[in-house]
Image 1 (cartoon, rainbow, N blue to C red):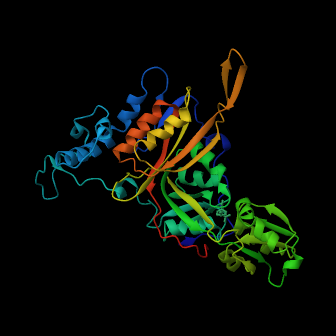
Image 2 (image 1 turned 90 degrees about the vertical axis):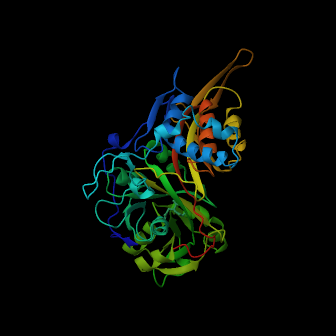
Length: 428
Ligand SMILES: O=C(O)C(=O)C[C@]1(C(=O)O)C=C[C@@H](O)C=C1
């Protein structure tokens, strides 16, 4: 992986008004896997389930034809599979593979010969500016996000950005091909800011990586622990090392900065002899700091999960384990969350994560009760990750059912799960 200059992370790229893609309340957004844009349906009277179904029809038709042949040959299947047809039982009419009406290079007519089927690479286009994939991340070189970019795309050009939002913009404005974004850590929990940004922007999750995070306490050469009055780092890193810092006998003030490596760079640039940074060993190398303490995370199996974002979704597959991430807001009614979750449980779809965030556009729901007055509930956006590919009929049916109980539903992405063996190690 090649990193670009430490001193110049990308800064905000467009005026704020253009930056924000607002989510309209009470609208149903469902992402159609085969399109670059999102399908946008009104959630008023009329189209609801049927709309979502037709947006998935192309996908369903392919899967159903496979399912059908499996069943015909005694391959099993059930009610779930049949329902997935979404009224498009004649699946072939929706085939994605166009017929080539022209001639081939020899001048021979090849009418009605199917062209080569589309592959993942067709829909996940290679960069236009050369062979190297450009991957935006928040922070400066030496940040864990840069390491995650390298794990996800080993030969990429990593592009530092000063904020998470800038990493999104870098992809949207074609400065970068992908963004890598931390979403949760085993000690610190969810990175809420990024959940909110996933909703505000229209990028697609195309992959995930889990990165063991191994923190070091860094200071200028010659500085001893006793001189340290301040420890600076990313808030997540400070939280991940809270207990160990105390155990080390450091009674220093904690101060949050934008990223771990940026903290190291700041100490070096300002020759701060009373300040230490929590960052990676690679950051120590890059900025000429010494390691005062190694492996200071409160748990040795500290791990951060990152997602990769792109302008286009990838085609979901069934030949390897996939995960799908969705976000929804529930509709009126009782036991809605229970009903939504059971749509997955009934189909044996494992949920790996559920997260709720305030519904910014509609923060409060009023529930009138003649006897006791008006109850005010908070409204939420629910983010759910589940272990299935959107190419699976059971996943399509689960979402069709979820849609009945939700006022808003969007598929953030269906992507291969990170299946690399788990080995807590130096995460730098
Ligand atoms: O500051 C960095 O080095 C980052 O890449 C950010 C970040 C985060 O946001 O969680 C990434 C991984 C670690 O959990 C700590 C910090």
